[in-house]
Image 1 (cartoon, rainbow, N blue to C red):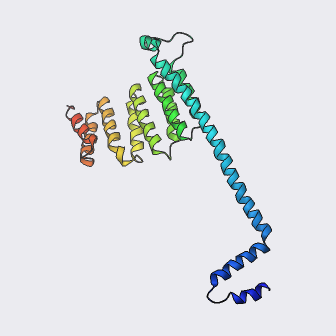
Image 2: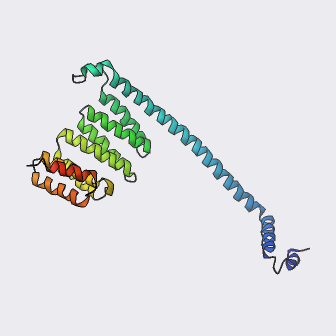
Image 3: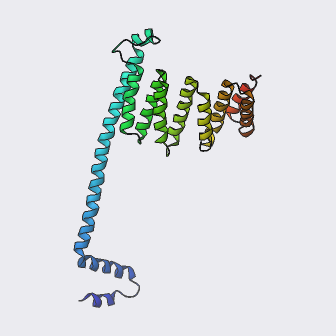
Length: 239
């Protein structure tokens, strides 16, 4: 019986059966095309599995390298040399915080767009800061921030670390400028904190009028925040 003849018996209420029969017929007529489609799907699945396996191995090795540097830093910080002579110049050939920071920096530069890479970059910045290598610290943190446009967490952490570096360096003008630039895009949850830091820097510059204005804005805009209480306390210390 031909397809057309068979189709006559499938007319009427049994539309689903008719549809299934039509699909089966088309499958038989175009079996090579269907095989090609299934083969393409199979290859895509295999490629995805292979990629995940390779990616997992690469990530695992990267994390092992980070862990190795973490161990070096822990050992260095707990060593008797560091405890007894942290304020003295390092002897020639002795490992320094900046040496360890450089290892973190290299790991960051090898994968700057990954979550792990950005965290490693922040670790490098903190160690450079602890070693008073302020310019190097700023350089690394700047790179972390530029790679964190889609990651609010890393961007915020980067800006807070940058402010710590600039404060330690005594560059209050640049710190204020950085805060002003960030406030327009900063999450609402940290804007009061950023403004509070801005007021602190104005106080360090002895621009008390500008500091008072910012602290008043914090109290007005964020009356129930912890930064509001801090702003009131800081305001009371300004003469």
